[in-house]
Length: 411
Image (cartoon, rainbow, N blue to C red; front, side, top):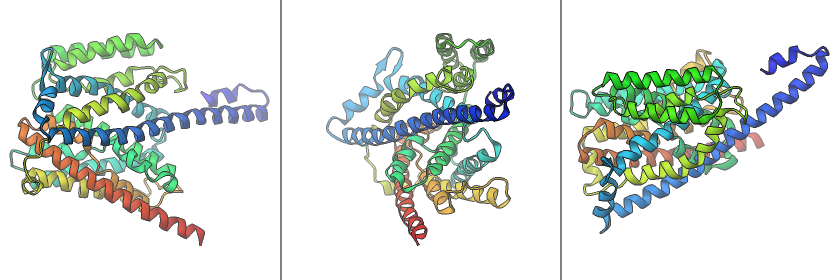
C-alpha cells in the first residue's frame, strides 16, 4: 500500500514528501467517511426518538388497536413486522458489518493497541449486564432474556452525544462508536449461539456454500456489487429457512464484499456510503414504529417488581457503565492499553453511562428471547425507560464534566 510506494522512489526525500501527501489525503478520506457515519447516526438517533414517541402515542389512543393490527397484518405469508425484523434489519446488520470491517482494516481497531480500549469496554459492557440479569433471573422462566441488556444502540448513543457538540473530544465519539460496533458484533454472536432453536442443516449448508462462493468472488477481485447483492439475497433466503436468524447474513455479506484499500472507489466504501441514509432514515425508523407500538396498560411499578424487569433495568443503567468503566480501568492500569491524550476517566464514565442506551438491539433480542406478547411488551417498556434514564445520566454527567475540564484548562 502506501509503504510499498515509498520504496519505489530513488530519491528518498522526494519519496517521503509524496508519501506524506498521499497519507494525508488517505487520512482525510477516512475522516470524511467517519464524519458522514457520525452525522447520519446523530440525525438517525433523533429520528428514532421521534418515531418512538409517535408510535407510543398512537398505540395508546383510540386508534391503538388499528395501529397495532397494521404491523401484525399479513404481507405474503408473514406479518409486516416480521418482514421488517427479519428482512429489512438484515440491511442494518450489513451496514454494521461494513463499519466493523472498516474499523478492523484501517480504523480504530486496525492497531491492536488502539483497539484494546474499546474491546475491553465492550466485553465489560456485555458480561456485567448479563451477569446481573442472570443473578436475578437464574432458574426462572425469564433467564432466556440475559442477552437483552448486553447491547448499546449506536444511533441513540451518538444522537445524545451530538447534543453536546464540541464540548466533548472527537476521540470520545470514536471510542463510543468503536465500542458500540464491537458490542453489536457480540450481540450478533449471542443471537447466533443462544437464540437459534431448530437448525435445518441442508438450508444452512446451502447458505454457507453461497457465502464461500462470494468469498471466492472477493479473492478473484470481482468488484461489481451486483453478484454480491444477488448472492446475499440468496444466502438470506436459505439462512431464513435454516433456523439461524436471517439477519446474520448481513454481517457475513459485509465481509464478503471487497474492501481493497478502503478508498472511495472500493466496493465496501461505495456500499457503505449508499446504505447510511436508507438505514438511518427508513429502516431503523420503521423498526421503531413497528416495535414500539406498546400499549401501556400496566403501571411501570408493577413491571419493575417482576424479576425480568429488574434485571433489564439494572443491567442497562448500572451494569453497562460498571462493566465498561471497570474493564477499561483494569486494562489501562495493567498497561495493556492506554487512554487517548485528550480523554480522561470522567469522559469514559460518561461514555459508559451512554452505553446503557439499549433500544434497537435490546428490543431485537427481546423478540427472540420471549414468545409471549405481554412479556415482550413489558420488556420493551423497561428497555425504553432504562435507555432514557441512561441517556439523561450520560448527557448531564458529560455536560458538567466538560465544563469542569474547560475551567481547568483556562486556569
